Length: 581
Ligand code: ARG
Image (cartoon, rainbow, N blue to C red; front, side, top):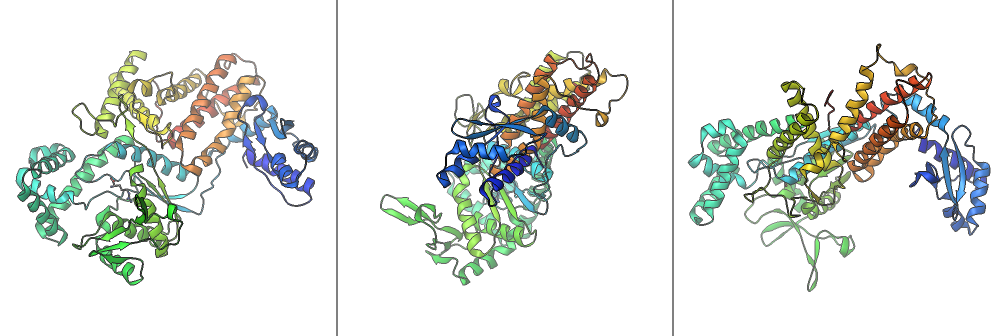
């Protein structure tokens, strides 16, 4: 049980005693430490329901509260209950954490499975900034869910069957450069796609040729299928290199094409069951009137009122769409993978698509907890969508390369004596960590401004700061003559700074589960910054190696636990820690 849960259970016992019937109320971390560690508005809420005086009720609750060895309680303002945790309670909890490899994090997900759908770039189109965000946020959520005990299936639903293949096929047959393809397949495929795309603008007959190649591919033409397969293999290989560098992995890569042979049957079923109908030759899902108009994803408000906004699942020409594949994908994930939850980490612009998709899946009887975990855009210094100087979309590989170069410069300045190979490895860890942390420390829904200097600052709210804090703690242990075993130490807490450090260490187990309430890795990022700051204040105020026993061992154990918590927390964000910096 976390400390917060322990307080809630004792509060529930007191409430039950006071009210004479089973009762419970929430306890939350206090917003301001001056008033205590935790608080509850139970007395105010219950007094209102019963038309009683909240402060009187609060006093009755306190009289029945058994907080022995745990905390003291007092009434504040209109009837808040404030709890101040006793240093001995923090000491006991910290000692338990030292022996707990989960660092106090409960396995709330055990017995449930979740599919995390993230990254999902489109083959032969460059990975743009939205895919960067999806990759980093999705990977972190998958790691967090796994640590919380969920069975996680990370699935890369790549766009491998889009209309772009008409252009790629024409390009492949007419202007492919095999040497360039060998050297950097993704760039060459993107170049071919771009060149053809540009050429079609004033050559309508070329556009027709592209459509023709696409139709042949979809009809199963052997030559086109072979080229398509080669494009997919090459792209996957290129993508894998980026994922390796990012330390991102998937359990499956079931792209759109995986569902091809299920689409026709799906559309037939929708029509037969009256879930969709033909309109202007296309098969569409319309509103079924079961929802209030404002909430109905199949309606849109226009000047003349609410009108239909159907989801098309088969075009008049027989072609299937993004929505069709996604419905087939839901079917597969629910029926074959037995997923309880499906999380889609995809940008805000696809909001309508997912609202329609989830509504259609429900009508179809595919029930599960489906979530669109949306995110905003990354902006350049000019607060406009991030672009390169030439106006192109920024590519993920270029961002990573520049981050690592810049990290190398920071490290060379800080520690010029490092051997070149080690310095390069550290730069890789620091540069990639910086990009990830800049992303994950933001509220995912806000647009954020990309700033190299801010994300690499050693003393800012950055990954390098956290990595450096970890390195600094580990360096304490290098000064010891013998290996240190924290598990046998007694924890004694005296100074405010060490109590505060213990308080934060104990909070780790409370923070991690809250991330999934609204899919906010930034709660963890901010927690880790707070923990690192608490460590530095502690380290400044409290001597460690020079302290007398039992303080010395106790403080060393706190240092050790802090480094473990930093490392575990960063690893949930997909960020590694170097040994030196
Ligand atoms: N390939 C899509 C894109 O780049 C994202 C796919 C997201 N996943 C899904 N099941 N729709 O926009």
